[in-house]
Every structure is written in C-alpha cells, then in structure tokens.
Image 1 (cartoon, rainbow, N blue to C red):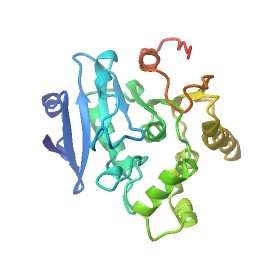
Image 2 (image 1 turned 180 degrees about the vertical axis):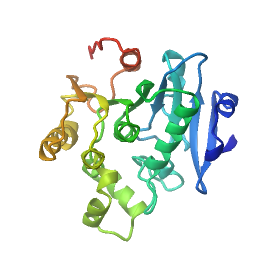
Image 3 (image 1 turned 45 degrees about the horizontal axis):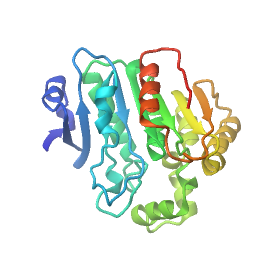
Length: 273
C-alpha cells in the first residue's frame, strides 16, 4: 500500500492510485481510503462503514467496495481509524479525546473531490447504520453535497449500550458518561451539528418503520430535536418502508444501487422497498 501526504493529493497522484487502497498521512496520523476512478465522470460517491465483523476482516475496512462498477460515479471508500487495534467493531468516526476523525475524513474527501474537479452538488455521501451517521455528518460539513442514508444512527449515545460503553471506555476512560455526552455533543448528535452549522444537507433518509429500536432511538428523536431547535427539515426526504424481516439491516444491494444512481443522475426518485 502506497503512502501519500495529505498536502500532496492531486489529480495525477489519484489517477496513479486508482483501484487501490491508500495510506494518507495527515498531521502525523495515518488514514486509509480506497478509490475507484472512472474516465470522464464528474460525480463522486463517498462510502462510510457501519459495524464490521472481526471474524471476517480486519481494519482498514472498505464496506461495499466491490460494488463500484455498478455506480455511475467515481467511488471513495473511507475506513474509520477509530476502531483500529482496540477491539471495537464500530466507531462513528469519533476519533480520540482531542481529535475528531470525521473532520479529517471530511478534509480528505473534499480535497479529493476538488482535485478531481467535482462540484459539491455532484458529491454524494452514502452509508447505513453508523455509516449513515457518518454520511450525514460529512455531507453537513461539505456544503452543497448530498447524502443517502439507510436506517442511520442520528445519536451515537442512543445506540446499543454495549457498543456505546465500549467506545466511551476505550477512547475516554477517565470521563463519566454525562461528561462525555455534554463535552462531545457535536460528535454524538447529528442535530447538534445541524444547529451549530445552521445547515441541513440534502438528505435521503431511508428508514424501515418496522425496526422499532431505530424508530424509538433515532428517527423519532431526530424529528423531535429538529422541532426543538427550530431546524427546518425541508432538505430531508424521509422515505419509510415496512419490512419486519429486515429489521435494522439495510435494503438489498440492487435497490441501494438503483436508488443512489437515481439521486446522482437527478432523476425522479422511485422508492419501492
């Protein structure tokens, strides 16, 4: 795997690294991405990870990277350095006590898009579950871009207790849960970010209405907090489907690909899940 300094990202170097995983050094830390470029294509999809299975793979993880040929876009896959070498399965881009990795990934993704001469309106962030949280977050930081998210977490602290406690105990062992929720609200809550940025990105929020935990912990609280903070939801297209068998699992691959391609191409989105 080649190493590239963040400051040295340019179109020639990216083309040279096509179809490869890259280690990007940024302010003395190593971040990992994988990139698949297509000739004469002015669109970019940025993928974020949900939880991974340590029995099947080890970080760096690039979920859905085998799908790239089926998208009408360049593809950038983001690993989450938060879960490296610590036994965690899910990290939400949280980072360390002093450094928020989603900020780093945002700068990396925007630099790659800029060097490929891709306009923000042609950049789409895509993910499910924790990857949905990361995708909404990254789209909020990248003004003018879009996100497509499926059954996302909107509030890290509302996810299942085991994984949340593992995050807290691994990254911030010296702090209480209440202290973490207060000090790191911007890393844990998507509506806290919307409020700070005074901005909500164009988002396609695909949610299984029959996943009771998602509705109770994330979807309904999101709607409540948007109202509480007087944040307009006009940029969020809520798409509810009903599939008790799937639960929290995302919609099937073919449906995901078709939906993302429709959004990228600016077509009337047809959602039959």
